[in-house]
Image 1 (tube, rainbow, N blue to C red):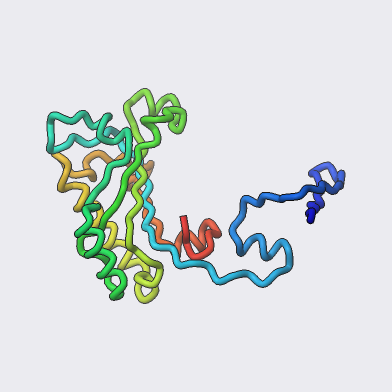
Image 2: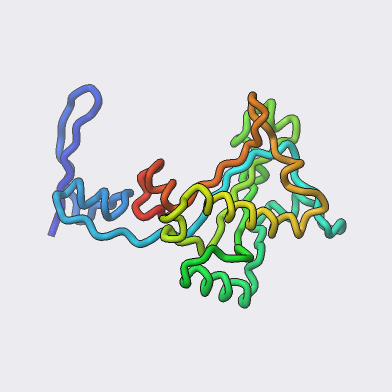
Length: 199
């Protein structure tokens, strides 16, 4: 059984391509909209995504570890088995985790082209944090307050491993605001069209 995809280019040319298989880089909901099918109910997203721009990487409490090495891979925070189980149980009971587990990536260490030459030359770095066990339903009643509470608790877990508060390393924008952005599953669905807020 084959499949066909009809297309139209920007300059108005149209055509059809046939194939045995068609790969779609879209959510099941977007694909259903394209094909006229009933979209499935999206799975609930459960990650808090935090993007940060730093003036420099923070120093670690463990002075034997170079921050560039620590942040070059995946930096795990509060992800011991017991911690993950406790966070899951709290989230399942409808409460934000008291000790939120998370993972941090510093993409600019791997690919310095993410930043412009000026920022990279001054030692700036990006950090992306994924907070786990933060299902969308936790944010339904008081979205902004829960997001701020969870962000504060998550950053406190990171600060426990640092020799200085992360806040001291954050870059600021032209108005002096820290360059940090937290997105809940509800934000991700609304702002980026990710069904259920799934990353």
